[in-house]
Length: 148
Figure 1 (cartoon, helix red, strand yellow):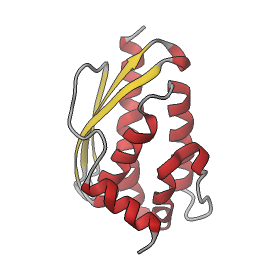
Figure 2 (cartoon, one colour):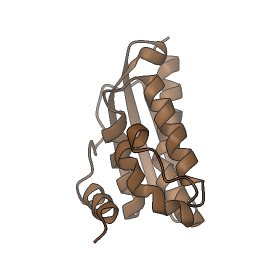
Figure 3 (cartoon, helix red, strand yellow):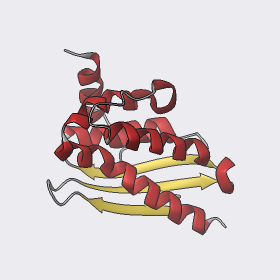
Figure 4 (spheres, helix red, strand yellow):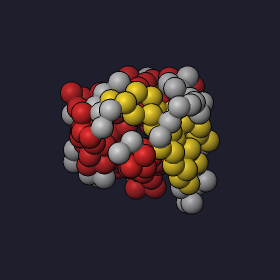
């Protein structure tokens, strides 16, 4: 089995930071209407501005293995980093996943997210992989507003 396939399966079977926790400043619920995947994601920030720390990312998700694995990878990669890092990581993930296989992803920026690079060749699955990232950016926006 391909290393990336194993990584996706591991994250989908044992998701990192699964379960909604407090405290949090921002929360977002997103649904993929084409397949029914759902995620509710919470963000807890410490500090203000681009140097604020993403202290915790927690979520509750229901969906396919790609959707669950993507949320788990997001939580693992972004928890403990700065808001600036989180934004850069989101942008790199979005670019990779919407590249139709042209962008293999930069492991230095997105870490385990590169395991999802093959998803970019399947437009219907891209939405599954980006669902938690959309929830994160929305929750981050709300959290930043709450901490100002």
